[in-house]
Image 1 (spheres, rainbow, N blue to C red):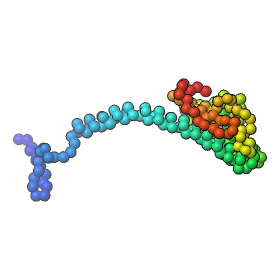
Image 2 (image 1 turned 60 degrees about the horizontal axis):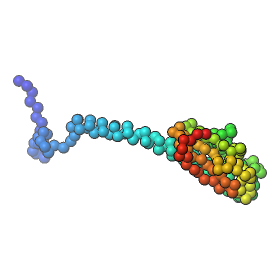
Image 3 (image 1 turned 90 degrees about the vertical axis):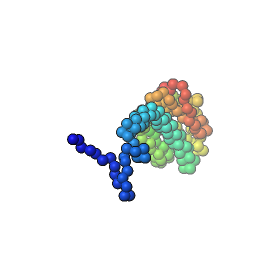
Image 4 (image 1 turned 30 degrees about the horizontal axis):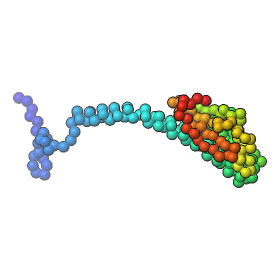
Length: 179
């Protein structure tokens, strides 16, 4: 003689059969299939998300240098003194400083970046000096249509180009980026 299990429970004075089609809930198999589908979709999406994060970091780094150039230029005009933008330890990837030349006052100090980036300056000078009028003191400090290039490990890149007038822009490098 076996044990009989009653699959009913009482709801507001009446019994309801749990095996009836009106019973709500998920079976274990339905739950396992759903979790498997979510895991497969996540595995497909994660590599794309990783490259998106790297692209945003690359763009952010180039835009920070662009902001430092603008800051150095405006400080030169505001203080009526030469202002120097210089890479730290000889490389832009190590960060940079913006210094007012007359009193050697450091206005901006940026530390090193993420280790997945590389950078170079193909021009003859790494340091840029702005005159009191906001123009670059030495013509083409980074070379003609050349500038500081930031590359990531995917071969994508951004180049910060500086004109003699002191204006700067960021260019996207679509071909294989190398420094």
